Length: 233
Image (cartoon, rainbow, N blue to C red; front, side, top):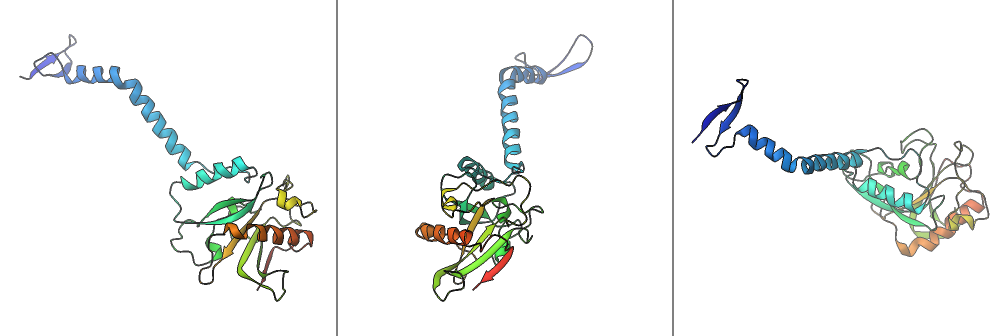
């Protein structure tokens, strides 16, 4: 059944199956038939893996298409994030306020603090990706107007670029709700909501208009301009 065959040079070509095929010949046939498909498949697989592992853009998301691209990148990141919370996002070139996914930072398996959120992918820090870097402005509030006895149902935190320490070429925010403040504002804004028993919960679309009004008011009255960290409870 099996017969050893050799080439003219004396090199052994492999084992024949008795019907004229050697292992070497069979491999050559498979390669000729499926080589291109296999090569394309491997190239595609490599491309997909590279896409999933590639770094995020070095510039902050600005437009609606940027938001969509970053959302896909966050959801397909390898290794995967363990969780997400959803917040309101006012990108510098967004046509409207957006709800975006804010990932839990790497290594976080249970959300216990606001600092567990990797908000720097939406409002980048001036000193690199570090949520506890105070170059990211942060204002937590539970009343409106700020400090008044009129308490809101939930408390919120606004992340923003402090206007007294702008990085070079930070763009003006042209998102319609921000423009309504009548004040020139630079950089993105992100708002997250706090739960009664949880440090952060997803925002609710029903709160959107209220948050628009509050953020616009805080910008117009200068509450956010030079504050880098503030909590009003």
